[in-house]
Length: 308
Image (cartoon, one colour):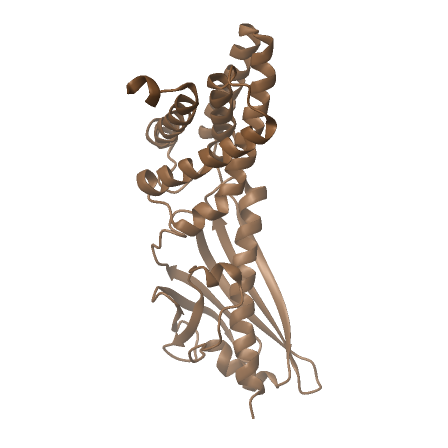
């Protein structure tokens, strides 16, 4: 029974995922905590690139005598990706949508590791094999020991057929959005903005941005230039598993420009800080989500402002 259970193929799946979980926990507990970083909020480059690559190498080692075709490797790595995602959901408490976002990255680097391993192990050169493992270990430790900081700003512009004075009242606060979701991640269940409220129309007033699942971003108006500039800092944000520890929204802003012809150019700006790396991959998603939050809110403001 156990002999059939622990075949070379199954050992590749089991041990590659076991190694990944152990190293992720080790990086959080023993390395990043020691240099003052919050292990629960920063996911480093190596966890999404080096570890999947190493997982592919481990699988290739156990499958080196199986005679797998390239298509077999692609299919096996897809299964291993789903297995890794399932374990992350259970052991690390990640959100489902976050795991959907990360899955293409994991799959690609698992494939890269598997094909690299297939080529390496065909030479049966132990020195070369040890060198590759040593290089991966050095990259992982160096990355885990480094400071990770990244902030970005996203801006979107829309022309509204109404004067600034009319647009302004809906910029500060707007009633509930009833339109159906258009963005595919919102359709899948990612929280989307549905309403904004304000304690008053003045500098220092409290403001709330309410999302579809009931979560609320607490805000404070820090610039109140009527009909021109509304800027607010985020003072408290929800601890949703889809965003907790991955991104912090720092500040939001609406700029209004009177076009002199009865129309207003509305610009929406958002500043955020990322805690997931590599930036070249995750910032693409962060920009997309932020932009679609802007568009949903600004289209609603446009509809309200242009209504007779």
